[in-house]
Image (cartoon, rainbow, N blue to C red):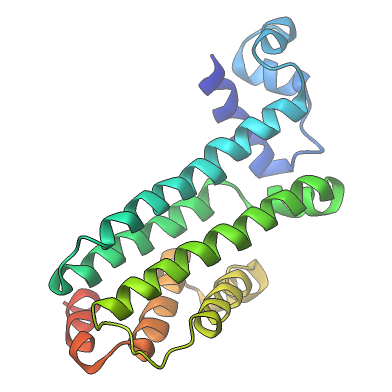
Length: 203
């Protein structure tokens, strides 16, 4: 029942935003009484918290676990493994819509701020770890400043995912993220690693 309610909440809030969705409409969509819904979740805010935990925080934990595996990768398998991790990003982005996030930013700034803090701290930590491993394996140039490339990546991904930027390019989220990855990582890579990067991206 819990997963069913969360699935419907994700669909409805992605369409209309958190504010416009009511517990009445969620119960009706789920084919349950409002009383049954409240036996599972005490409030709409509790549904929101569970939704964010399930589709934002937990999904990013999967990336962290995958990053841990990079430490054990050989130089030959590092880039393909990294590409697998990179491919997880659009799946996380696609779980919840811009309508949902825009509504949170406008109407629940405390929730939005919590998510942004998590996003910045977690992604910076994970991206830093990836670059450090890459340097250890002579895949990332020693001269690359970790903070510079992290912020290049962060602001590029964040801004290019906005509909007013992405739609005119006529590219899907995965295509955009792949292009960002190839440009950033190819530029940061050592000569030895560039050949492997080309194999992974261009066959």
